[in-house]
Length: 54
Image (cartoon, rainbow, N blue to C red):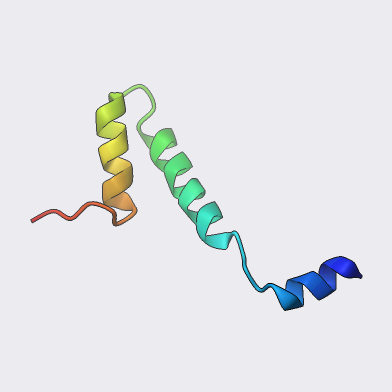
């Protein structure tokens, strides 16, 4: 019962982080053995909207 009360009191969720983690795992799966670490990092930034291409 304590968990239910806490979930109403603190409506925070880890859904955003889980979604980001899932996206990174998908990038990792699709590029297995194909890219170097720097390209992998840049692709994560690009896919997650942390890198703007002009």
